[in-house]
Image (cartoon, rainbow, N blue to C red; front, side, top):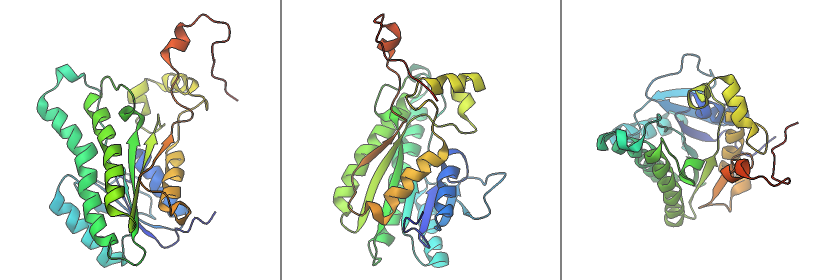
Length: 259
């Protein structure tokens, strides 16, 4: 399928592991020139991906990275703010510094990278497109990752604000991802049986793959979404099973089905 991404230069933060690796692979399959950054390279990196070491919390390092991408590839047409995450920790048990670091990585760092990218994109004939990878954690209670959920809610709000400020030259949207099956899924859901059990609570009958998220990102980066900005695209397989359904005794209580 040709989405019009052939030859487009796209930066994917955190683009060598997990969801980021899936996004990078989808974009590379579609003919984009993909540059992935992270604080350290992956053990088995995709040879099609140009890797750059960068701590996206460091504004000077980000500016240097973006300048290097433009010098090497001639443009920066797309940005995917994917890097982020948080370990499980109850809010009352961690320090204020811990909360600050989580918010810094998941909300402030994407803003730093978006600012650097926008400075390039605004002067390009074709402008540019930015996609922020957000989470359902920002749209419902997130016990154990409270600061992460708050940061992702802030990222979605930031997406709308930047879209209004930077239109029509630069489009910016967010993909709100649900549970994704990555190499770290078992840390969140237990063993393989736990991962499968969680998948059965989702209407689509499984967790998302990183490529599912990548496909949504590719659409938003592409010319097919040329009139889409300030939007959030939810990629959650139909949503999470509500607790009251497990407590209900009615015979017609909804039960997820799988094929």
